[in-house]
Length: 212
Image (cartoon, rainbow, N blue to C red; front, side, top):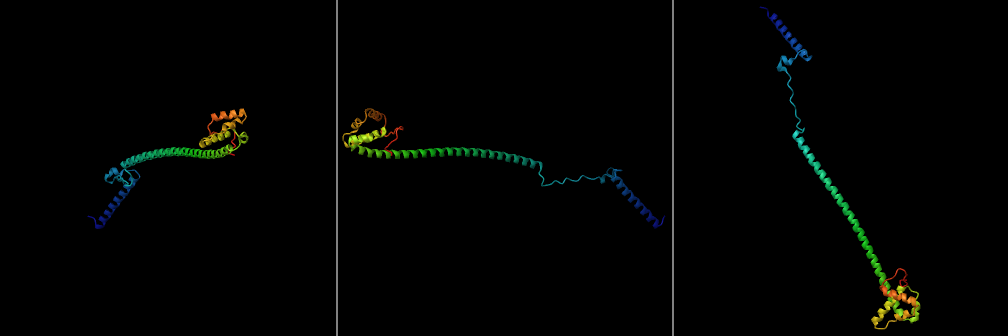
């Protein structure tokens, strides 16, 4: 039997050998000279568990998001369609309003012209009454000398007014006699126009002296 010192040296030597074998084993595995997983399966590296990110969407959530996006796109397309329709309606309404404004302006212009025409007609009728009264109270030859230079329609309107006033007063009218004092040709022209035209019509070919 050896001494205690010999036993200690043997144990130390065994530990050193074990340490060297262990270090050499891992060195050889590191450089691929041996496969430690095959020799010691317990040392095999297990795949790490996948750490799912709770904030990352799942496939179901992605599908729902896709469907929601499609619905949103459809709604946006429908909104745009309605907006375009509203824009078309607005343009139509604006066009109709412009037409109505033009019609209103045209009607107002016609009403203005009618008012002016009525005013002119009333003014002419008033002047004709004054002239008819003056001519009726003149000597026939003097009246003829004044009338002869007038346009035919003015003569006719004054003579008609003289006939109207004589009828209202119940007296005889001198208009027929006045025409006999005119040149026969001029008298015939005036008589024909008298029959063919209305009392308040003013022909375009002659300017009226009554409005002056």
